[in-house]
Length: 197
Image (cartoon, rainbow, N blue to C red):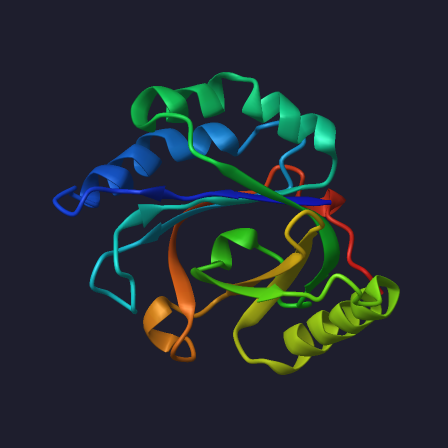
């Protein structure tokens, strides 16, 4: 599994409703995108829930890399480049993934949180991966409203990222947290995302 996110920071006077309209008109086209495990169309709105600026910042889970590269080279990402320029795209090899037994319908995801952690280069990655797998499984089992967790590691920067997928709205999430509102969810290959156990 690969995790992917690009974050487009919008001008201070940008009407965030334009992003809502864009997702409403284009989001369904991803509902049948071959090889896409899960895409959450995300925004952060300036002045709300700690956001310093408004952003369009979708997060993708790809079971296989071929589909990810097909998207980046294809018209879907081309439309992003045409509208906003080419944003930096963060990608992480999947370190851990777990989902709750309550996550039968991915469209129930209402918000995401992102947490970043820098690891020491001498970190024992075998042990750390085992720990993250155990933590993810425990979190989705015990935390009310937490539907899934995806963890990735960038081995260039030694930065670990955790995305938590919530049935709760941003207003219902623990504070402070770096949270995103979900506008639309596409999950045509959701069944191909394999949990680590």
